[in-house]
Image (tube, rainbow, N blue to C red):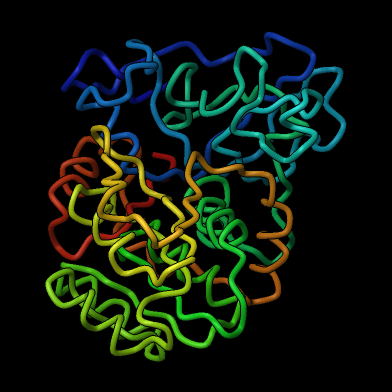
Length: 345
């Protein structure tokens, strides 16, 4: 089968690899019908994910059809259309039982697919702990509607959930890339008093304005002043940092009111510094870490009910045989690209 493979830092290559086989009773083999490219894939390519293993097939955003299941798999069966969770989790350890599935203690726990074990930018993928990692796609929900459930949409849903947003809150979202838009969609489900999106790209601000006209927009240069002018207590009640740059990390706590919550959704290329003397007295609560992707069934239900729609994010489509072109486009951020769908062929 064709599989896009991490060769070494700076190099991915489309290779012919053996089709995966069941290795454990809890495994499933999924034929990938639609996948996508994530910024985390670029982080692997550029060497900022040290745990990534050279030689693995990359990719962790995908949907497909179950081809084969191990004897212990009970939640799905061959022929089911499924979403694939970005995280592998056993469902039995302390962390899984408390909903902290990103910290699963299983050897394959956490972000494994497309990082430490073969992922889904391929024709087939083996999914460990398939009872937890696969969710059936409801009838009437298309592959494109479900494509982002297992990763960026799960991330946005998790971020909104842990931020404890109330109807009286002013919420600031920094970053309007794909994860920022998924975060925005999930914040909208909480119905806060107002939502402000800060984004440096004029094209992405235009995307937000076109699809979500009730959202207030600003850019990094004017963000702090804008937030103070459009909030009730001198800053945002909740800030979600989704951009992942040094200046946006600083902007996040700067724009928060005293005693606010700052949720760090972004993955950074290098360590960030908390300037505690400058922050003294703001009494901020920081919430950070990788997504706990344990809400996929609920997300699929919301999609089926028409309450979440991420299909506008799919701006380009490529067959797997042209995935290198898709990567060049996605990495260059050219032609208004938001997300690329990679299909069989």
